[in-house]
Image (cartoon, rainbow, N blue to C red):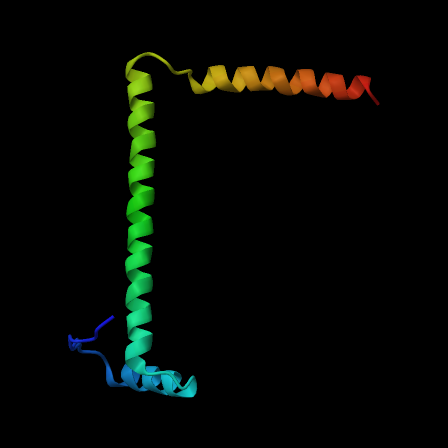
Length: 96
């Protein structure tokens, strides 16, 4: 990848000094580390956007199901699973 662009930024002197010391301690060019940080930031943002889109799709599907009347109240779900738990516990007690 050709490196033909210069990127200038303002930051605190102590942050710059600490960063330069850390890169020198690893014997790595600061520009290489900054490029890696930028790539990681871009990857992280892309993952977040992908997840946000996935989550929005799930919400849209759920809202459509509610609008179509394909849903159950919390009370109905709790009652159903309480009955299932009770049946499972009875079965477990019979096998002991």
